[in-house]
View (tube, rainbow, N blue to C red):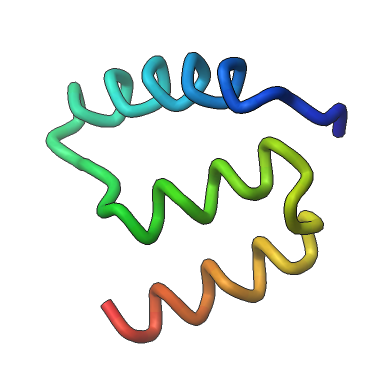
Length: 59
């Protein structure tokens, strides 16, 4: 997976949030921050999966 700038991650997140909104879903701030960290390379995909699982358990 290639690393993205904050601006690129924002653009991707905007598109993704619009897509899931059509389905009546949304991301909370913690979920959004986690995805952005993965998109920009601040965390690995493996770490992303671990943290996403933790978030889902505490939802």
